[in-house]
Image (tube, rainbow, N blue to C red):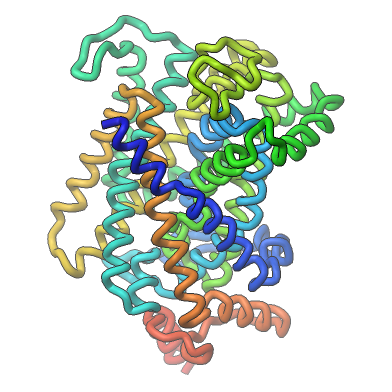
Amino acid sequence: MEAIVSAVNDVVWSNALIYLCLGAGLFYSVLTRFAQVRHFKEMCKLLFSPNTSDKGISSFQALAVSLSGRVGVGNIAGVAAAIGFGGPGAIFWMWVVAFLGASTAYAESTLGQIYKTEEDGQYRGGPAYYFDRCLGQKWLAILFAVSAIIACGVFLPGVQANAVGNAFTQVFGNGNMVSTSFGDVGSFKLVALAIILIVLAFIIFGGIKRIANFTQIVVPFMALGYIVLALIVVFLNLDKVGDIFYLIISDAFTAQAGFGAAIGWGVKRGIYSNEAGQGTGPHAAAAAEVDHPAQQGLVQAFSVYVDTLFVCTATALMILITQQYNIVGELPAGQFIVQNVDAATEVGSAAFTQMALFSVFGSFGQAFVGIALFFFAFTTILAYYFIAETNIAYLNRYFKGSIPLVLVKFVIMFMVAYGMVNNSGYIWTIGDIGVGLMAWINILGILAIFFVAKPALLCLSDYEEQKKKGGKVIFDPVKLGIKNATFWEKRLEKQSKDAE
């Protein structure tokens, strides 16, 4: 089974997808005239726009929900894996995919806002909705919805849970070994699993408001705390920082690190971490209450910066400054391009990060990584559930009934349990397939949308023009020639009647 999964992953994550992700980011960066740079100040300002609706969530809450998906295991264990398999140069390519991906995040999240709907008293939207309403391709919308449900409900939760289990074991040990159908599992890991499942069940049965309220507190607190520890490590080793950045940039192009390995692992882990182009961000973006779709697009572009340029870079600097890593590259098992730590240290886990903080802060640093992983991974699982729920809501127009939604809740809980007690390499490969499937469909879809209608670019131009003129910003899709944005058409009609 593991061999089959690896073979499928090799097909999904071929060089074609890697260069498609980079190419799409460059494409939208040029077309938006690098909006991710020009509107950085506006991004920060929009974060704190208030929410005046009980049907949507605020821009900050939408950022927190999307960051709960973006800031996860990929930022801690994923960065360590990128360095371990691709060398320090992989971090450079993570930066590249983040910078370019911010424009992709703008485009997909703006589309999520334009074509959102109001269902059951809350806002819904995402790739399935804009493929249906903009392209008129229901088969593509259904294909994405099914892929997202499988990826976020089945493939991806196990990756997050697995990293939590490994980090928990690294901090507290295994405890007494318990014999299970999956082999011997430490009692401490089972305790962590029980806590996760209980809290997870409480929150996912409470809907998007409960998820948003939880993530808007936990995500910023943990991300800030994590970055502060990284800054302390950097401050204590200021004399090494210049050499580390030189190592990252120079290693990105050397044959020793493996040019292909550095790009491949950097892009793969970059997309897994920041999710730009994957099609996950538009679900949270669509749930936000905003005056203009471009506003949420810019907020989601900023979230890519937070994820990769801040949190992932923090992890990379800690690992590289303390030299707590090995590089295996494409070599056979047991051989290393660089070996700084015990050969038995698992590359595809949070071990490098924990060892880096342990070398500076002792047991506190190791424990903090475990705690950070717990919350990062837990909030990511919540984001996965929300994405699966949104796509089930889309499919409900064709397949009525509440059973699918209840079923996906229990499937996610089962996959969390399965991921916690299984081999991490196998689980990571399954997660990569989930990310790759959604990325293929979404990136090709948003490129097709550009050639059909250009709604995201029309939105940006309209927003920029209104901001220059001053006054209240409104969105009139009919005026811009954007069709099937029925939510905004009805909203504008209601505002006109209220004004009369």
